[in-house]
Structures are given as structure tokens and as C-alpha cells.
Length: 443
Image (tube, rainbow, N blue to C red):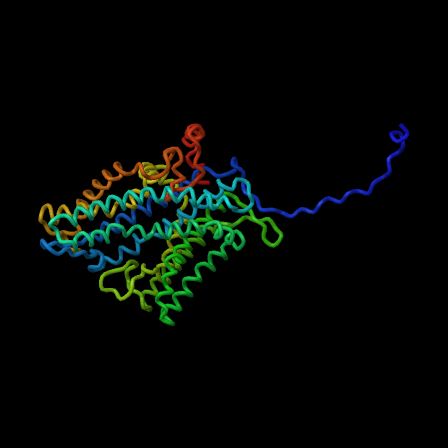
């Protein structure tokens, strides 16, 4: 009792424990809705890649020898490559997709941890499944051709032509695997990290042409496309409001440049790319052409890097316009490609080969002379035939793209766009709200 009634001794106040600011990410409720801009960019880029390959269709068959050419190598066809060679936009959307995926994996963690590798492990099977179907089908086609009376050279020529789109996927897998490390670096350096990344392939190119290190230039196949990929990562994290600690202060992970700065940067990079082609050792086409001493795409050169920077900057500058198009006139196209962009990318060359083979071998006809009036006049008919076959193929093998719940979470596809995909119930609840406020996803 005495102890209870005795006055307590004053104690020294305990100083508060020092706190260190930690970077934060928005919780699940603060994450932005599905990014319609990424959907739109991916749809436009996919259509451009398909159109570029379909414009290249040029072949001849005399009953024994199959000759494959490139229609864009005739006349001023190379100019189309400056418009339709838009691989940078696919890598931009791939980077944004990976960043949004890491946000979902990390939850409220300040930086991507081991969950980033879970993202890689989850996406790799989704990527390999449709690729395995393509390889299996073409293995059967090549086997059938080898067993047919046709010369074996025909089978091996087609076997080399059909899988050409797969190189993109190999680079994509490498970049996804490096995403956790790349994202940490970008969080630490911001846009300076992108600038440093862009300087690496330029240094390699200087060694390639200055010291003759041709083999070293192969690393540019990853380094060049890592630049638009990194921009996509920073774009997604900046749009999501992520904040990091730099020099003891909590700051946004990145601030997106204004439209005027993006347009000026894009036009400047495009002009510099054209200047390099005019004065340097580079061919005028941004893809490999028959007869060219080097290819601007294999491995990618400085003009391709600058062209990629220009495309990414101009796409970001046109963000609001692309969002309005995707929510209006282009809604059906964007929605369809959001679900089947991988299948379209993998099989559009096969659809082209099927139509050309039918005309050359089945009908015994010749293709129009590239660049001629007949060639241009027949493009709508040829494109219509290619598209008809492609639609049939997509309906047949499209189910192999994405997980079983793909229809409910289209943003999780390996090459799909990338907002926070809602669950079935959440998506049903969110759809009326999007109809009432169609511009909300653009903010």
C-alpha cells in the first residue's frame, strides 16, 4: 500500500526514435485504373508491325526454286520503314506492363523485392505456351513439305521465314527478367538512368565502327530496346504516384515531361536520326534490306535508337488523343488486340505465307511487280486476304494466349496492356462507372 501511495519519481522523457523517410507506393485502392493509353499504343504498334511485314510480301516460284524478296526494297519503299518500324512502342508497353505487374506483386512495399522474380516466373509460361503452339504447327508443316514432292529448299526457306518474329520475344524475356534490377536503378536515378542507358549502345556503336568490334555490337540487341522499355517502367510508376527517397527526401519516382518538351525531344531525335543516315555509314531503311552492306535492325544502330526515342516521346505527347481514340472510334480494335495481341504478332507472317503460297503454287500465278501501279492497286485485296486468314488462325489458336482467367484480366497478358486489372466482380462494378466517366482512365 505504501508503495502504491508513494509519489512516483519523475522520469526523464524518452526521446522519440529517429525515423528515416521510406519510399511509398499507393495501396491497392490508390492504384490507377487500367491504363487505356498503353492499350492504345500497343494496338497501334501491333497494326503497324503487321502492315510493315505484309507490305514486304515478294516471292517468285518457277516450279522448282522459291525466291523470297522484300517489296519495300524497291523504289522509295524504304520510307515506309520510318513510319511502320515501331518496335520501340511495343517495348514501351512491355515496360509499363512489367511495372504495373510489379506494383501488384509488391503491394505497399517501398521497392520491388523477391516478388519481382515471381512476376517473371508467372509471365514466362504465358509467353511460352503460344510460342510452343507456333513451333509445333510449323514443325508439322516443315515435315509435310519435306515428305512432299517439292524441293527440300522450299521447306527450309519457309522454316527460316516463319519464326522471324520470335527474336522480339527473346529480347522481351531478357528485359522482363532484368526488370526488378532495372526498376531499382530507375528509382534511384530517374530520367538520368534512362539517359545513361541510352548512352551505352552509343558507346558500343563507337567501338563497333571505330575499333571493328562487330561481335560486341550484338549486345545492342538488348541495350537499344531497353531504352523504350525503361521509359515504360518509369511512365507506369510515375503515373501510379510512386515516391522514393533520394538524398534524404521523399520525392516522386519521376515527373513526366510536358507535351511541348516531349514533342521537341521527339522531333529533335528524329532529325538527328535522319542526319546520321545522311552522313554516316547507315542505310536509309530502318530494317534490313537485300543488298545493304549493314542492317539498321540487326543489330540495331544509332539511327534506330534515336528513332525509338522519337516514337516514345511523340506517343507520350499524344497520350490524351490516343486515350480518346481508344475509348471512342478505336474501342473495338483496342479491345480485341488487348486480348489477342500475342497471337496476332506470332501468326501474321504465317497468314501471309499461306496466301502467297496459295497464289504461287495453288493458282500458278505471279505476284505483281513491287512498286508498280498494279502492286499498289492490289494492296487492299492482298491485305484483305491476309487478314481473313489471320482472323481464322486467331480464332483457332487464340485460346492459348493468356491464363484461363484472361478474359477477366486482360492486362496480365505477356504483351498485353497493363493497368490494374480488376477481378470479375470488381470489373463488373467498375464498368458502369467507366461509362459514366469515360475520361477517368486517362488521368
